[in-house]
Image (spheres, rainbow, N blue to C red):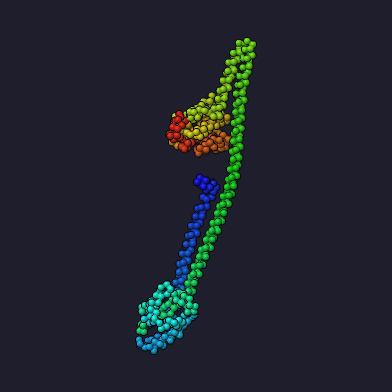
Length: 474
């Protein structure tokens, strides 16, 4: 399972790319869906309006046809009695002859459902069609007779076209001759209207698809642009990182060489000379003792003294490299020993203050603050020309703070106070940054103040203190 998760683990660059592209993709997808829905809704309203307009035009046309037909037989119908069969025959003949277009004709049903006129579909004549329905179970004859009884109106259903015998949608207009109990009507097929509507819908769908393709193309172009920009930025940042890494590596090498040179000088100038003195004293004592000279014991005492000095020098160098008191007693005593040695060696007055509190700093924080103090004192000794140094270290509710102030000549205009401008200041800054803390430097002609803050995350909890044998003050 861990291997499976490792396959899906993302690098920082991949996470950054996803962070830039996923919201873009989601936004574009939402825009595409919104545009498509809005386009479809708007087009559907327009198509519906067009369909209604075309059908209304067809209905007006049907009314005109019925008006023409009524004009043709109105005089006959007006003078005839309800049972005038001769007049009825004449009217049916007139209506049978009134055909128009490719599929237009007039039809007549009596109120009992019998077909009396159907010139283009003569198989209907003389038969009773009560209960007739279309393929969708829409009543035909019964509804036509009902509408005629009510005075007239429109009815829509599916009906075979006389010209092709294909079933199509038809709109009919029917009126009633109440004296004769006839339903007279005509119809017009609206398959052309439906084809126009379907074509409009297909065109709208094609436009929506084209718009989606355009949006997709723009999205892909944007993603490619983001990817290429990310690649350029990544390459540039990698080059900068490589340059910084090379610079940092060189600084590490320089620091190592400087430390090696310092240790070599300490060994040569201090321990080596002391050991040469010890050897000289021992050789002189041996010669004098062999010659019976009683002053040989004095030379032995001098050799022992030189040897004691060498031991002290070794301890001092060891303490500079890694003070044991820092691990054994904590930061406070280690800084106290450092300042005492600094005051004795340089003659500069050091005023050290600390608040007695439990050893709550973790190991990284203790080492970092000690090295910062050590670096600061080294800079003061070499460059500041100070006569007094004040060091204060204390813990508080936000973490811990180390403050070092001197009354020297300051950093000067050629040495800016920004951390990282010099090797020593840069080392201090990097140590604090590793702890996610802050380093502030204030400099003037009256002296320099260095303040290093360590966050609360590097303060040990009580249970961690107990596991560390509850060491004494920091």
